[in-house]
Amino acid sequence: MNWASLYTTQRTGAPERKNTGADLVRNSFQRDYDRIIFSSAFRRLQNKTQVFPLPGAIFVHNRLTHSLEVASVGRSLGKAVGEKIAAKYVDEGQEFTEFYRHELASVIASACLAHDIGNPPFGHSGEDAIRAFFNGLDGDMRSIIHDSLSDNQRKDFEYFEGNSNAFRVLTNSFNEPEPGGYKLTFSTLASLVKYPCASIEGFNKKTGLIATKKSGFFDSEIGTYQQIAKALQIPAKEGYSHVYARHPFVYLTEAADDICYRVIDLEDAHRLHIISLETFMDMFLPFFEQEKEYYKSREYVEKKLAKINDDNQKVQYIRARWIGLMIEKLSDLFMAHEAELLGGTLEKDLLKCLPAGDRALIDRINDFSVKKVYNYKAVVEIEIAGYNVIGGLLKEFIQAVLYPQHTKSGKLIKLVSSQFPVTQDRKNVYQDIQSLLDFIAGMTDLYAIDIYRKITGITIPEIR
Image 1 (cartoon, helix red, strand yellow):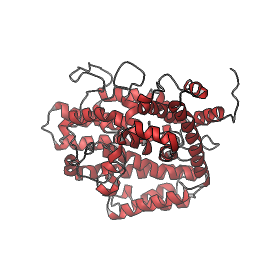
Image 2 (cartoon, rainbow, N blue to C red):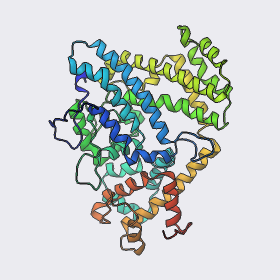
Image 3 (cartoon, one colour):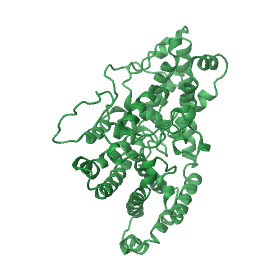
């Protein structure tokens, strides 16, 4: 791969050589950002769980606020790296310099903005609930699905992945005649696919490839990703059917998310009085101990903290300084690993490229978060609720697809938005189940609970 071929203004659903037209206000990549932020799928993230249950008396992050913050960090990473690339390759021409100096930041911000747009309700437990349902099928329902689907199609459901679903949400037109979905640039879409791998070849850490850690596109979107890979000259991995090298920009999108959730989940835990200020400080202040520049040193940070009265403001100050430090370190690491990035051989994320001392501190945060945050009682309760609600919805709606002769089946399908066409034809089992997952995964937490209560008779709907 080379930096000059890794960006394009070509969009999904558009002719290959279409002139995108002049826009004196926005470039092509800023349009991507605007299309995402004004979409209904993005707005629905405001009522999807990040970690802690919503809503509450104390504000905590939801998927929308998290995505906005990741986009902010991603823009800074893109700007820092873009300046370095433009400065290093001064003879590549005006278009090259313009993109890396001014437009890469928008590409990374857009990818970050959309990185969670495919996640179902109830956080990661929503993904687990979908996987558990399809892996737990038995009897006639299991036979019908297994006989109707290819192995890869079946793995799309048994290993349902929010990353793959985000790619589908952004590129699929669903029931609309105009192709291309959101019609985003290939550059933005490629920067979003963390695991460029089909479901059947994914979820396999033994390969040593970062691409096969999970999956990045469903069977139905393989052709779309192939088109993007060809245009951007992203190489396929030898010995696999549908596994590709990561686009280098993905590492920046991933880094922005990694930076944010590690500090922000603990910031939320502090606001909820799950952890103390002292614990928060103990987690993040050690990162500043080895900084030689005084204004980045622990001494300077502690001096500034001493002048702040409110504990929440102290946490916010540490968060801001730590994010700034990580942006600087990871943008430098990106360039330090340039050869591996362009060769498609960097098989670890940028955080794992940090010096041993910093990696140990990151591991400490990870371990603490698992023990004290992600297994906190209220978090576990919302995860269990997610299993029951999503599992219950899937049971009702999948039965309606597979057994259309039942009176109840026709009534249930009427509840599915016309945006997600369901034929109830055995020839279209894969497409019908995908439509149901499009419908369910797109729900907010509250809507999923509401419709689950109504179709199971827990709540009797009022006539309005």
